[in-house]
Amino acid sequence: MSAMPVMIVVLCVMAIAYRFYSAFLAAHVAVLDDSRTAPAKRLEDGHNFHPTSKWVLFGHHFAAISGAGPLIGPVLAAQFGYLPGLLWIVIGVCLAGAVQDFLMLAASVRRDGKSLAQIAYSDVGKTAGTAATAAILFIIVIALAGLGKVVVKALGGEVVKYSTGQTIVVSGSPWGTFTIACTIP
Image (cartoon, rainbow, N blue to C red; front, side, top):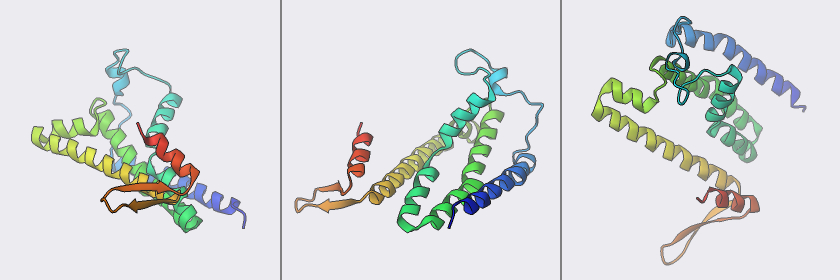
């Protein structure tokens, strides 16, 4: 079977989600208002805030959101076939990743470019903000650990336990060794 019909269906689903679902989110959830000035213009200081072209902003945003989805999707495809990987990417992009990124971007713009941790700290108080910051850090660590485990397992990694209680991960693939070597600081 040719990949072209699948690609056309995926592009149509993403175009429909972009056209209708993003418009719904912008109008009814985030309640965007074009009359608001962006923090880059309002707080321009030449260092942290300065207006830039939409293509530079797109490049930075695209690089920042390329997280687990584009990495785990192909790994799932390699392990379970293309359909689970395809569904992971399409459903994850339309219902989770794009929505989360859009709403966090809207909240950040509305709050003068603050991060999620800073927003939580200022809106819910010092104690709850600190707890939210710790939770965000914990979620990031767990997500990266899970991503690392999925990728290493897909590359043929296996756990070896010694009688001394020591455990190491041995890769059965040279790419697995390369991946592990690149992640060691």
